[in-house]
Image (tube, rainbow, N blue to C red; front, side, top):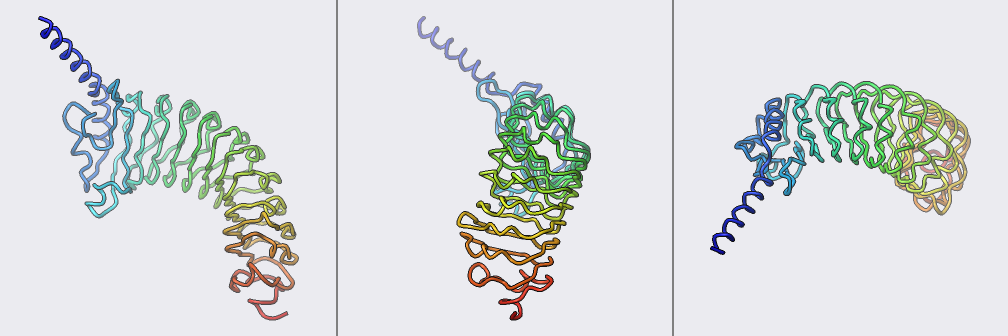
Length: 365
C-alpha cells in the first residue's frame, strides 16, 4: 500500500511537471499565427514548429521551465547558428509581424532580426507586452511609426529598430523607459526633433540615431547622461551648436555628429579630455580649433574635415597622448604644420584643400 501511494505521488508530480513545461494552447496558437504571416524559403527554420508542444525543440523558441509560457523568440538571419553555417548563406524572410504575437504576454525577448524582407508596420499592441526586455527587429523593411505608448515597456533594456523604413518622430514617451541601455534607430526615415528631455534615459549607454532625417538641435539634457558611451547623430539635419558640456561626459568615448548642419565653435572640453572617436566632419563649424590638447587627449580618430574652421593648427596637438587618424582637410586653416607626432605619420590628404597650410607632408613653407 505505501508503494502504491508513492507511485501515485510520483505520477502526480510528473503530471504537474509535464503540464507546466509544455506550452499552453494559447501560446501555441499565437506562434502558429506568427509563423503563418511569414515565409522563410531557404533554411526551413519553421519546419520544427509542429506538434502541440512549442517548448519542445521549436527553433528559436524558449519557455519558462516553471510556467511553460513562451518567454523568448530569437530568430536571427545573420548569426553563427549552425543552421546558417550549414546552408552557407544569410537568411531571407518575407511577410509581416502578426498582431497575434501580442498574445504571448509572458514574452521577455522578441528578436526577428536581419531577415531583409520582413515588412509591414510595427504592431501597436507590442506595447502591451509588459515583461519585454529585448526588442530587436533590425535589418528588415518594417515601416510605419514607433508606437506612441512605447514608454509603457518599463522593463525594456534593448530597443533595436535599425536598418528599416520606420517614419514619423521619436515618441516623446520613449524617455519614460527608465532601464533602457541600448537604443539603435539607425538608418530609418525618422523626422522631427530629438525629445528635449532625452537625458532622462539615465541608464542609456548607446544612443544610435544616425542616418535619419532628424532636425532641431542637440538637447542640452544629453550632457547629464552619465552612462552614455556612444552617441551617433550623424547624417541627419541637426543644426545649432554643440552643447558646451558634452566634453565633460566622463564615459563618452564615441561621438559622431558628421554630415549635419551644426554651427558655432568646437567646445574646448571636447578636445582636452580623452575620447576614442570624435567625428565633426561635414558641418558648418567655424572659428579656430581650440588649442587645448594635452596629456589626457586620446583619439583613435579625429575628423574636422569639410567645415569652415580657420587659423593655425594647434601646436598643443603634439602634446596629445595619442592621435591615430586626423583629418582637418577642406577648411580655411593657415600656417605651418607642426613637427613631430602625430603629424609625422599623416598623409597629405589629411591637410588638403585649406587656405594656406604648408610644411611636411605638404609643400615647404
